[in-house]
Image (cartoon, helix red, strand yellow):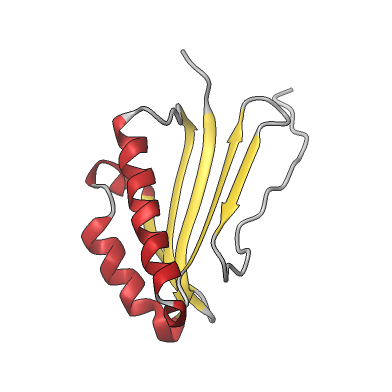
Length: 122
């Protein structure tokens, strides 16, 4: 069965600088993960949300390698051009209560957050 996680990542910029993010994501996001990606707009930001639940997020799986390569290239562009205003955030929550991984780029507005709750199936 394997260890399962929930993951979410956001790729975004302020509305006035979002066209370049859209172009990059549309042309470069891994095709095998496109079903988990959706475009989002708010009053201040425009970008994409990648979300998967109950996933084996193993770094040696081909689709995860492709995702990490995409993120690495995205961050190289974002860090290389300070005036682009691109941001990136990532959260992975594992099965264990203390297994939470969070990363973000410089300039992130912290639009992702982890909320814990207690639920019952009773």
